[in-house]
Image (cartoon, rainbow, N blue to C red; front, top):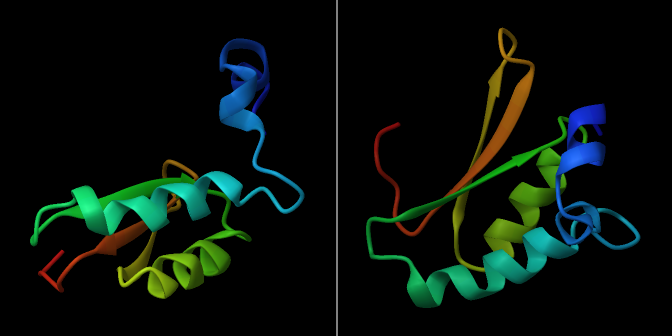
Amino acid sequence: MPMEARLYEPRASADGGDDGLDVQRRISAAAPHWLSSSGCLLVETGQRQAPHTAEIFARHSLLPRILRSEELDATVVRGAREWTMP
């Protein structure tokens, strides 16, 4: 975790449980109830955790896609209600 996140983010935002994915589980379980039919959920995550987050999204009927920016050193998992062009 970047130092600035440890210093300035609320503790609850950094507590993901034993494997770091508890927040992704809670959000993806609720997302199908509040996302519009063309909506999507975006979660920034670690590169190693991205495949696990994608699996969690799929279990909750979200179509996952892992997006990576080398320039920004950032990984995002996109979970869509229905497939749309990126």
